[in-house]
Picture 1 (cartoon, rainbow, N blue to C red):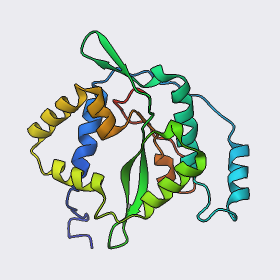
Picture 2: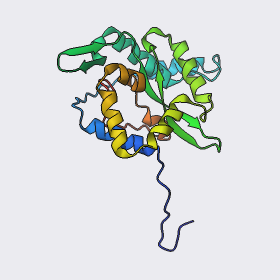
Picture 3: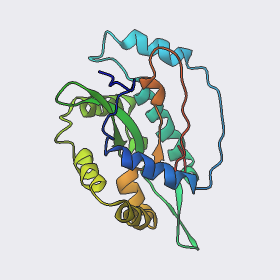
Picture 4: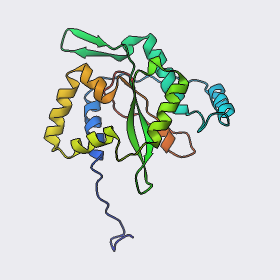
Amino acid sequence: MPDAAGYVQLPWPRIRELVTDTLTIGHKTHAAVGLVEFDVSRPLALIGDYKEQIPGGVSFTAYIVYCLARTVGKHTMLHAYRKGRKKLVVFDDVDVNTVLEKAKPDGTLIPVLYIVRGANHKSLAEINHEIRQASLSDLYNDAGVRRRRRIVRLPRALRALLWWWTLRDPARIKQNCGTVAVSNVGAFAGQRPAWGFGPAFLTTS
């Protein structure tokens, strides 16, 4: 209920500290933005056709993850990371960082980061199944969520040091953040189409 001043004060969710951390890093990263339009009416129609045949249907996010991973797998410089001053690290596996909508014990839905490992070597069916299973898994026991809980308890200065240590090594970036990212913020925006472009530090997002 609003108080006498006409507004409500809510507690700051500590997990948001990680959001501000990544936005801060993203603002310091050199990035080029490109917009390309694709006609996805046929994929959407096929997804609709298979909806009744596949338990849970086919996720459009899974389809985008599949397409991105295959593309980056063929053009590997899209996920090359600089190591030191004289080296580039190019991974064989395309690890796609995306967002899943998961339920807390009280039923509240929250976005949770999830990394599809080696997505360029997986079929659409495998990626779709993996994402579905991850979405249904217990949020409390999610390893990534537990790790983020520990990190957000650290003071900002220590989190900044941890980020600095992580970003110095491409292998640590891959382990903790994946090599590329898919933003599906539009999936949480309701029925109207929506796009969100936040600062990012991965080479392809």
